[in-house]
Amino acid sequence: MDTPRAQSGLPTSSLILDINGIAQTVDAHPWTTLLDLLRNELELTGTKKGCDHGQCGACTVLIDGERMNSCLKLAVTLDGAEITTIEGLGTLRDMHPLQRAFVKHDAFQCGYCTPGQICSAVGLINEGHAQSRDEIRELMSGNLCRCGAYTNIADAIEEVLSAQAGTPQREAAE
Image (cartoon, rainbow, N blue to C red):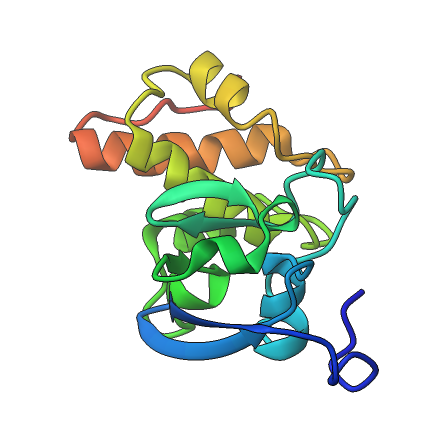
């Protein structure tokens, strides 16, 4: 983990990042991942550290609108990028449609993976490739949920996709 005080004398690069709609200038060491920058430097702790190897999806954020595991991206490679974390998607008073659907469908249990699941689902919808429940499940397969809320997660995503397409949602889960 990158600790700013212990490494303050080592070289950094200055970056300009648009994080959740706010342009910010940050200094990052060459080895600092986007995940560590978000959590440690910017105190955006909604993005979770799971495996730290790109295998669980807990750290998924949107980079220029595309979903990405933030533990696999070095911050210095993102100068000028637009980054959206779970904190940038909505608020308690004005939730993103996927956040509302996750609550409605109880698409979380412990909640640890939920920020990454929601960011990944936003990216999935932006990509426009999911046309069926099977495609939703396949395209979300990079996001693990140890509690096993997969059916509810698929229900939530399917609801938002159906609402955007103007088609009725299925009545019951699988």
